[in-house]
Length: 292
Image (cartoon, rainbow, N blue to C red; front, top):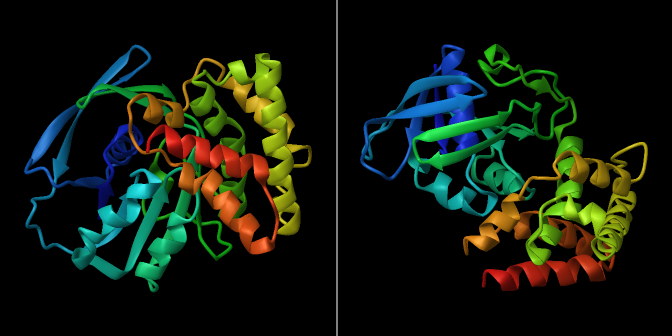
């Protein structure tokens, strides 16, 4: 069995190594004419080297298992470049931030098995061929629109083993809510996660975000946590105090952010429900203006 990978960034490469460790063949889908490359993975004091194989540009072999780790805004463009090879009943796993792209892929492949995943694993690249794993994290995976306790083919072999989520949409909403509370503020104020907790003004703004998110959650009758969202957002901000959010990193590097699939998705849901989210709407525009 072969898993093809779209999006060989830090998280994509990390899960490629986990699949390889589990004895699974991995092929990188890329527009670059490379047959393979060496990847050095540094994890604590351990260093391992992997050979990542890339499909030829003109490859025609059907794709039956596809892992997507691109940024959410790039999902459709990336998948459409290889659409002619993807089987109609393929297993497609989206391991990404944000929401909204899952429905777009489902519309493109209505007969496919669409899986969604979230992870707290942490990795970064010092160069394209050197990957640093800073946290093994926890990964949840589940079939969209179907309550199932299974995992995609071969993923039960991975270490650490992913959690089979019976309701992955709840997991997606939980992560989206936390991302809404943290990422845009760090991008606007250009600060580390922990500074949101220690600055009274930033903390007040985080509370305003959480209050609006809970309006949408309550209207959807989709409770996220047993306690308030702000409590969970503060906990995550404290746990990742020295982290720079991916959204801030994108802003600092003048790259498009995932704001449309995080705060933008929340605001779209609110519009459909007739709910006003003035603070999140303003924040959405602020972040978009930073990279316009």
